[in-house]
Length: 216
Image (cartoon, rainbow, N blue to C red; front, side, top):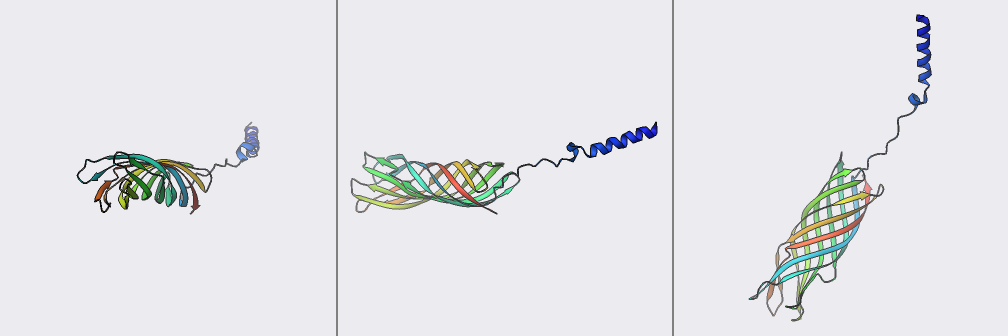
């Protein structure tokens, strides 16, 4: 009886060793997307501005308006597990007049906006949500067209924001992003009529971007 049981046990073990279930290779899993690398891209969107200006001996009129914006971006980022850390710079030019005050017959145009920011992301495979913040610069023109004079100035400030980005394949990604920016005061010389002091208090940028990533 013992010999019979031993024989049956050996036969069962041998038959199972050839079973396709046990002999099959472990299933293949798709690798998690790697966000590390250098990238360049283009973007387009809208910029909204709210700001007062201070003409001498008059109340502070309010400016408010919007225009288009388009430009280029570039950056680098590194991934650890699900965390992504990077740095990004961008430059965009304004498309059209940004704000106008018909009472004072003046207008204000954002000519270009540039930022240099850190990015902190949480990746869920090929999709990432992120926060961003850093320094910002805006070049603008104040035009007192009723007087026939205008002047340009560069404003320095800061920006914060966030967005969501998705990888379409190993190289191309697309994103939707919001940035808030605020800039300090600058004087615009409207000689011989004097000068005005402008502060870009609130700037809101909503944009979409497409980027190409060079894998590390």
